[in-house]
Amino acid sequence: MTNQFVMTDTPTLRQRARQHIEAGAVTVGYGADREAVLTLLNGALATEIVCMLRYRRHHFMVRGIHSQAVAEEFLMHSNEEQGHADLLAERIVQLGGEPNFSPEGLLARSHAEYVEGVTLVDMIKENLVAERIAIDSYREVIQYLGNQDPTTQRLLESILAVEEEHADDLADLLFAMPPEQTAGH
Image (cartoon, rainbow, N blue to C red; front, side, top):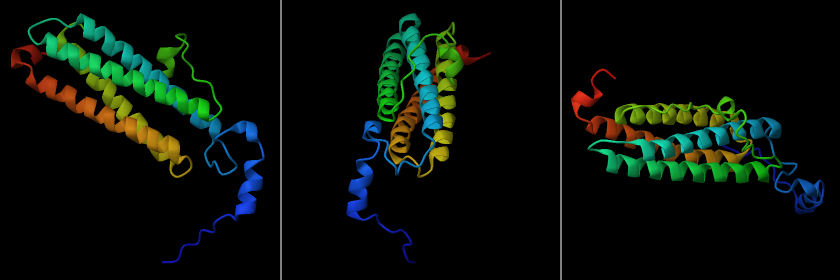
């Protein structure tokens, strides 16, 4: 199999790097639709913020015999979601955009919902649903990007791996609940 790809010569690379220098990391070789990627990343940012807030609320509101361990899990997930939000905001800026942290329209931009939940099982289920939404939406964005933006693709792949761990953790918590607590839910 022969490689049809031809490397750009050094003088051309140097000349292109001096063009549109104000664009920072976004060079002529950036293949994705930057505005579309920024919109997708701001949607992901809103999703992470909503998830962080929901987990944080659940951390404080959880009650019952299993509450301490579950509250710790919720707090850990909340902190990780905040870290994801920070990474997404940083990437948005690298691409010349502005991260949208405005509370106005936050739920509309988010893929996940903010459902408070009443019982421990409700909270676990709502967080699990949100993780499953994030997993599918990040997979779709990764597929959309293809090879056009490998940096954003790798970032989303790393976030996706953590979201899958969160979903697995929550499924384990749900499975560990006594049957009488999960009945009827």
